[in-house]
Amino acid sequence: MPMKLKRSVGLPAAQGAELAAERARLRQYLDLKLAATGCPSADHGANDHGLLEVAEDLLHSYQESGRLLSEHLPPIDRRLQDFLNEHLDAEAPEGVPQLPRGTLILDRHGLARELSVPHNADYHQSPLITSYRCANGVMHNPVNDRRTTQGVFHVAEGGLPIAGDKKAVPLATFAKLLATALKPPADLMQLPYTAQQTQQAATWVSLMLRPMVCPAVPGMSDGKRFEVRFFAPGSMVANLDFVESVFGNAGDPLLPENDAALDPETWTGHSGCVILAPHLIHVTKKAMGLPHVDQATARQKAEGMCWSEPDERYNDGGAFKITCRTEAGVIITVIADNYFGYCKKEVKTQISFSANLFGLAEEEHAGGALAFPCYSLGNHFYPDSQVSDGSYTLTEALSLLGDDVERQREGHAVDRAWPQVVYIPEDAQIDAETLQVSWRHQGSEYHIPLLADHYYVHPSGYRVELRKHAGASSWRLVGTLPRVTMCHKPCTVSGGGKSEISKSISDAIIYGPFYVHDIEADLAQ
Image 1 (cartoon, rainbow, N blue to C red):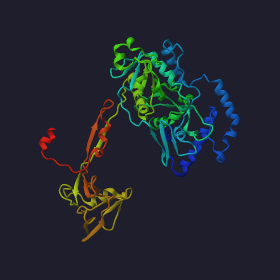
Image 2: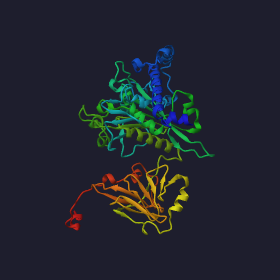
Image 3: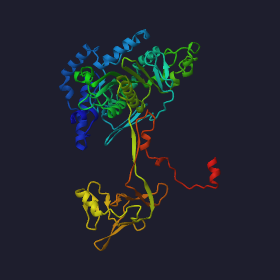
Image 4: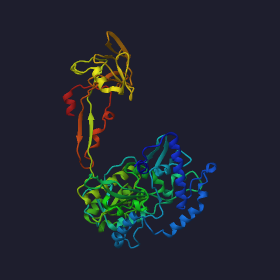
């Protein structure tokens, strides 16, 4: 299980010297994979480990086998291509678009992350994304880090019904968009990994996911998973790093142990595909086969799926994603953008598609938060009736905490795991002016300093901390009740506000002086 988690989601994460050794192994593996696919591998100069020279004959044999089997697709790709061949045959007179062959398969977690930055640098910038290597991984900053959903979702005709809030696209237009998506410009295919050397690798990168659709019921049924294939031009490998970190890497699709059809008990029977193609924002409506406005239907006119000028861009040159899906259980989506969120949400959409066809499952989740009321105490804290009814004592609390705390001679205790948490006696008082916490113990008065980064916990669970005012230079005591309110929002549709419950509104609060002359008149405005 640990090895499976490591290959799937990279856990447990390596640290320190182990991280450096793991990256070295990944780079060696990547050099072999690049050479095996006929791409230039990394030029390590004086640090060349010589592995490619040792494996030269083996790589030549592998390349020749790949050439002879160039038309042989992984099982999941064959299922997707068979769907395209059948569904688009009548709409693609120039030939049904073919899924990429000979891609650089990302068969374990971490390869996409290593590929997203040059092997000999910690920074990479392209027109679509900027990536920085950090101590704990790689930070990706795509040029588009937020998007709207207005006019973005397009669905090909000829399959399942299309909702009114989606744009309906002729199937022939989808075929042309797909064909164009699979012919990206050369600069889009270049891998960041070799960007700073003379011989640069340019290739498609691909990834397979197996997200859960229906969890297992122990003793009753196995869990059911969906299969998804991602194809991205080499320069967009960072998107696949993001996706596999969310849903996990399902391994090499060529291997029989990863073929969902050979394990039908754990497969919903449905297949998905996502192709990244940001260059589609430059195509024109006319070139993609949309009708002239004079021949368009009322819906096509309303949704902009027609043209009056030959140079009008599809979707007005804006980002979009177009989906083709039928009751056969196959869904193929082309995303004309590099926004990470579209990749994640598309997988969730495809999970919903599979759940709806499979039945007795739903791609939904709940949201919630534990809300602890807190109050400004000013400069002084006294253990009055608002804090405790007098029935809680530090002696009782420490007996419950046992060896998890370290008792101090002054009468208080410090948490062993979290030294900034201090357990104070029931009669303790806190003064922000003198910066002291004081109490009586065994007939004597004791004091300890009041520190800004510490939490002082009363035996009742009431917590006091010294906190700086968000809009001023002053400091104050803040008390937090131990009695929590559970805010829960059960399953709703996307956009129902599940995650908003747990988000702080502190960043939406503006601090500053204001003057109210007439409260009723001001509110009326």
